[in-house]
Image (cartoon, rainbow, N blue to C red; front, side):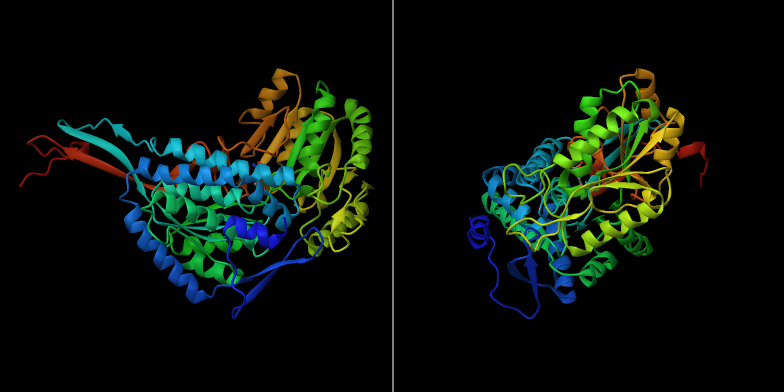
Length: 499
Ligand code: UN1
């Protein structure tokens, strides 16, 4: 299916020309895919105004009814999974399996949000005063600004949008400039669900295609109580203070520098498979990608040569080809930053296996690389930086305490894993004195989380929690209510104040 047919099937209508057009190319071969119109700062203000009007209506629609819209959106996604998954592959270069997986992740969060639409539970609270009742009620928050990255161009928006919509909010979405087509397709599919629903206010979802100027206007807009931003720590450092300066809420999913520990008792065959998927899957361009591996000295000699051998066999190539496991990097700068990280690793005494650019016949315009495994003499230096590419730094350790300390000794705190069959080690890793990350796993890799759990991490990862668990509370405001059903007026804390 060519791109025009695909976009047509997804309901995306692109203007033939406009004042400011953005050319979208595919990382698969560098070829142009389409041109999309870019929005202006004035468009941003208008979109927020429309979203605010939509919010004022939407907040009064009962939550289970709002869930109905999200249920319909999930149905539309199911019917268009193949097409949207393919578009994601064309625009990001992730393999088709992962493009489809991303759409499944959207469907999953819709299902989760539908259930949640009947479970936006508040509290009843015992009052200290006779004839009084206290409660906590969760109300819709307002316009949610969503800023998303190229690597999960649809799912991360869906985590936010599905929850925001059942919570009674409207959404203004600024996707990555590298993946505007996926965003426009998501918006068109959402619009289909709105039509089927019948009574969704216009402006419930607005998409803004543009650059940092647009994002900056959204971030600074006092009518947007929540900014949910996914991207680099550098981006988060710009967003967070601006949102804080106007007392908005920021929900941040920033960098990760995720580690795994392989203990002596580990099931090495299982660990090998898990490590490979986590380190090279999505060409190392997940925020949860495995980037650091700590292998206990006793099993290093058995595991690491097998890993190096497996790295050599990973099929890199066209992400649409059914047997490909690793597609291209997103663009040339990504390839350059990978090469410069590898050069630094060599300078720091690392032994690099793989990492070179690969020529894929017929796909010369794409930036394909052999994933790199780098044996490092010690933890530190370049290993502590997140390079958004398939580089796995491997180090030896002696004691679990040392491995945990090193895994925690980076600025980021997103995801982590331990491979062990020793219950004491596993529980230590999961304990308060163990991994300092938002996600800590046992005998699976750090990437590929399900939507049911809260997703996010600590330190420079930004502290936000999205998706499952009680992440919905980010999209609502709690109100504490005290009701006096007595004829008296007792004051709290027993204060006497009589006229
Ligand atoms: C991201 O890379 O921004 O856990 C999100 C995972 C996916 C989401 C990744 N479910 O790897």
